[in-house]
Image (cartoon, rainbow, N blue to C red; front, side, top):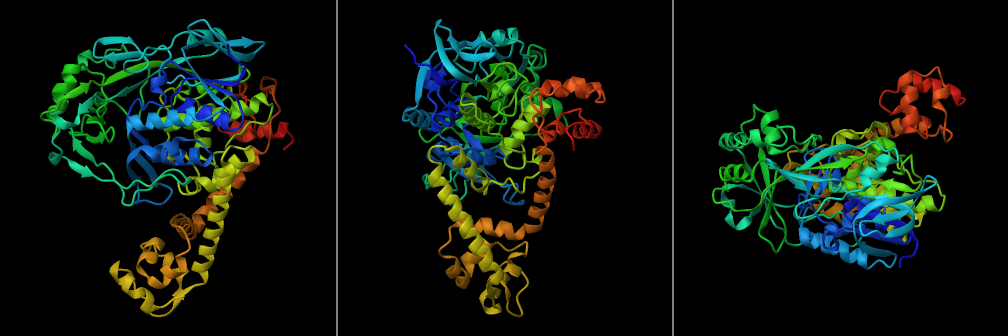
Length: 621
């Protein structure tokens, strides 16, 4: 009935979809298994992609020929660059998506791929022989063979949904939990844990008074995520901002004695940086209000997502509290918020390729590894799909360094440090964030996609080479072109910048912090004529490289120092226990994590500089 697949991907959320596409675009024959074909790429929580650090990840996925950015560009209803008032390392693209269009576009792109097949069923276990994965067993008793398996089960593994004192099995609202896999993996020697996440109530937008809230428009003109020729958004939907108040908090507190969080019915830890509204009130008792973002779910629906009001309190308490929020006085609720508790597997059980230590060619990606967020899941799926393809061909794994991508930071953190609470990416987690900007993801990563032989990478690489050429030409022009007072002073006066007394190089003007090259191009006709043949992306890249040249060089120097440790390889199956000069903790943790390099070993929690010195001596350095 089934062929022997190269890769089976279990779960069709954001991680599963990217894993399937990545392996298929490298030439693997892929089976994507899902419990429900109607919920492929479902946005289970907020209808948005990107955000602080997450937007950089979406750009990186796109640069590596993933589909998340393309799908978002085709289906978004609003686009904004966050943190524009800060430096370019902090600029983060974010888009509100049409929830239904997003899932439909993803499914269409998957179905158009000739190397991807589908099967609707629950994966209840894996086939294992001689320490190597051999396929998947389904709840209907079928055994489907494959050379590699990627598990992307999301919140479905033994999922339990909590609303007040009610609890029932489920992977998300209206869908049953997945069973069998956790129990089998534990029997094979894996360690598991429990985590929690949640979602806010969904609201009837027709019942809201938007004139009582702050409006939040998108950027004009709108940007986009993909480096390909995806469409530009011409019309946008607004979001709105409102706030809770002391009366809202008082009503919510009346339900605390029924809260599964406070009564101990939920054992798993929730996301620290995206807490429920009851958790916010409890943890930040001095705050008399909390900000809420009122986000539309799409073009053709009145459903509204109340970002910031995640809750697992009883339905009636949620509803009474909502009615006291400005603009919500006549609110109608589609469904209440809820918490969901699920199994995960501490990611210290993985190598940097996301392959498990215990079973060859078995990969984990997404929330099964303890992360939270579509973007974090999608990038893991992409890397797991690539490495599953490489592994069955016995090729070297594709591993990104911390200095090369936020994806590299995320995976390195998970594998070397682990997590006991839902992991979310922030710019502060990256040591080299000036190098890892959202504007240069294609320059950093598309050459890798090209080397891997990823489908579509040839055209992308041509764009990268052209962008690099244009940026270099712009930098040269800026450093050699002189401007006179009569060309510049009208513009300088308009922004209260010191006027020129004589001709100077354009370079000296661009170094002023209040000056933007993009604005110079708009307001100084002589410069606009010189820049006419260059695209805005190349202009922005050149300006950042000039303005932040010193910072960029400093980070590159730090990367060079760190790379010296990354280049010192440790042999496979290195016997750390035999090095009695190491501390007992170091021997235990190095044996557990199995680092591939001295650099990776240095980032494992509990490993000291003296431990690294001992390792360096042992390998002859």
